[in-house]
Length: 269
Image (cartoon, rainbow, N blue to C red; front, side, top):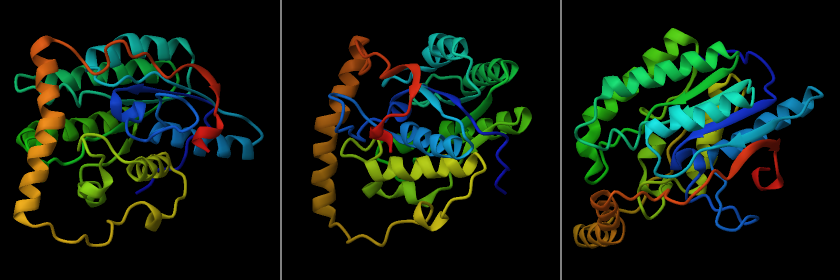
């Protein structure tokens, strides 16, 4: 059941990693930047605010590659300092890729962050991970991802958060929704997630525009699939492993694309 929207939000801050930064949803108006679902959601919220005679201010502090320590640490501190009335927080995805991660510890830190946000008077938007059951290599983390998804729902129920439920969303298990790196969504994927988030916040949407799966795709032969997987491993998995071994991150030397609360720009319209 979709909850009723609690308010018209006017100060929205997004924190997280590459998912919230919007990787692979290219922003053609800003060099070396991305749009992403959070920017698209901000545009939808701004439309609602303007209809009510108000205006949205929006900041996005998410940075690719960041672990939960950064999301619930410096990012959260900066977000709360802005006095938001809505915070989207999607973190922990990079953590649960690591075999030795304590999923319950991840949940505890997310819950503590949620408590801080709620105590500051802001609403909270969370998201579950996508079910990785059909993803090469990443499907090995399905058990941890499932536990993480369950924890997100529990935290949301306890503290009155909104949730983007990606776990059971069949449309996102279609590889046509994903960029060539198979880690980040395409522009169409980000568009759909933004509408899903808008719906999760209690607004009416045309579900047929974002929820249903894509039409059936042409079947790919075994040989072609094997070649594609090998090329993907060389181009994307290899560099990721190398960064892990050398203690580097894709987010090194990257800063938040929208570090201050500002009016929503045309790139999100």
